[in-house]
Image: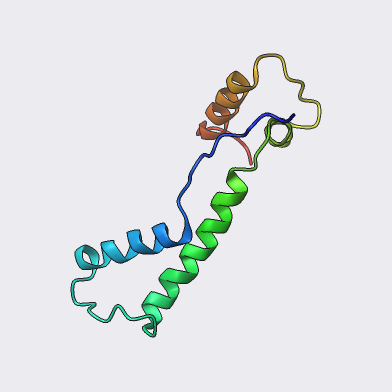
Length: 102
């Protein structure tokens, strides 16, 4: 029986659209046409759809995927020496280092 993966973000398409529509009055008070035929609303719905797809994929990241990402960041000779969370923290610190060659 597989271990249940945690749900990292449970927002749905409808939640994302409602959140974006709720921000319109504060960021663009002159925008009053909130009908689906408005191009801006269409763009909001498009981004909500794309965001929902990304959130779905984000919730599917397993430990094996994380190890492969760490190997991608640290090079092909990288071997895990500590627990996974510690290795992830070290990799994030290295990525944020200002003096790195890319």
